[in-house]
Image (tube, rainbow, N blue to C red; front, side, top):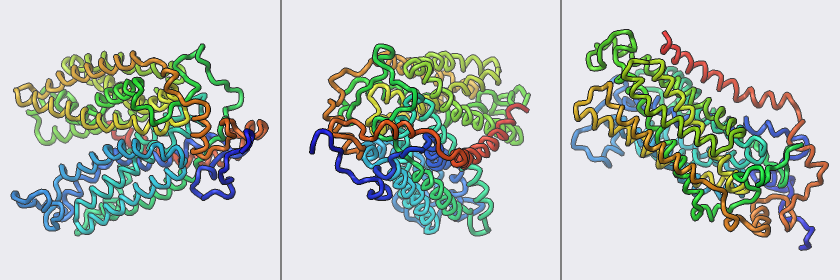
Amino acid sequence: MTQGSTVATASGADAGLLSKERIIARPGFNRWLVPPAALAIHLCIGMAYGFSVFWLPLSKALGITEAIACPADMGLFARMVATTCDWKISELQWMYTLFFVLLGCSAAIWGGWLERAGPRKAGVVSALCWCGGLVISAAGIHFHQIWMLWLGSGVIGGIGLGLGYISPVSTLIKWFPDRRGMATGMAIMGFGGGAMIGSPLADALMRHFATPTSVGVMETFLVMAALYFVFMMAGAFRYRVPPSGWTPAGWTAPVASTNAMITANHVHVSKVWGIPQFWLLWGVLCLNVSAGIGVIGMSSPMLQEVFGGRLIGVDIGFGSLDTAQLASIAAIAAGFTGLLSLFNIGGRFFWASMSDKLGRKNTYTLFFVLGICLYAAAPSAGGVGGIALFVGIFCIILSMYGGGFATIPAYLADLFGTQMVGAIHGRLLTAWATAGILGPVVVGYMREYQLAHGSPPSQVYNTTMYILAGMLVLGLICNLLVRPVAARHFMTPDELAREKQLAHEKVDRSGHAVLPPEQMARIGHGGNPALVAFAWLAVGIPMAFGIWVTLQKAFVLFH
């Protein structure tokens, strides 16, 4: 092969339908078609956050109106295959745990494969796993075998979550090098918003399919699997990747002299375990997520226990409320939870977009400094009865929790380059799996400890808030220690060229693009504006529906 020859890869016309060569963008393709494709997948897999809507109906799958309890002496294995008694909610919740453990593990294991296989193939596999898992779970309900729910939705669905979550990251960053934060924020916003759409849809479907002999969950799983499969496949087949070397018209990559935190070089995913900056960012993500995820899981009981009757204008504690009053404050707490979800979603787009202007390190510094102050102030806000202040504090905290997820891919691209950022992001998501255990344990066990030692319900979260503030102090230290990656960790030009060949990019042996400049200039803009509008409407209308339903619940807070 001569120096000027191209890589021996299949042409787009000859390549397989799912191959990466097939989805290299051609002149006239508009890059604004890629974010709605990513949203189509993330809005579907984001329903993982909303699976709690199924716990209560599934706990009465046999009894319908009242759960049929298993014998007290029945062992775990016997309960896994029992067909004569109902499942406990605590057993069903293992699906939720498996979701996020498998998300982190699958993203870490198959992130490198994704970079070479391309986002379309990863998106299709994600759709098959996520929707296939729902079908297996539906079969588990039919045969009343809880292990099939754990295997279907938890394990197989969890793998689909991991592949679907990271599938657009590298692609979006390469399409929007000028707006890395905004691009990833748009997609990851969809993951946070999936439950806003899926939960009310699932509730409506269960009510529609419910009969005197069925709670309607099996049928709901099958319908949602079909709907999600259509949306996810549509998203996967709309993915395109830019040709190697493509940049937006008029944009020039920043140089080290203007921003030392943004590199033009690339780190191979196999080396990141040995690079200090990776572990510092691992700590940054883990600690930021731990603080936020613990609050999400306890937001409803926290508001009720801290304010008690003051939520409805009655100056009595939580333990003294009657049944009607408890129902009233539970509705208000549900509105609080809905409001937090909106700020979680909005923060993903807002803070990620702001990071394009502030810089990733400065954005995370703001997260930690502001978060420390807000967590430290929360006990005082609850103690003086400032409900609006208390709610406002946690809305801001949850916006930064979501913003942390959306900003981290761009932070990784700045430090480690864009060539393998999807795979590196996949490995970093093991921090999420860790935080999913750490955060709820800290909040939940501290609450139980405080109650066991006689603390009144209105004060059981005070110590927890200070502990979470301390976790953010550690996160701040990790972030402040982040420096540019040393030159020895980057791939050499020959290694980069080889990696591009393995990733099926059309380059010559030196790694340079082979498309002529006049064709490059016609990629990323133009095309059919009606198609762009349709793509955004296809994801925008469901999101608007979810936001409206959530706002209706949140309005209770202000009545």
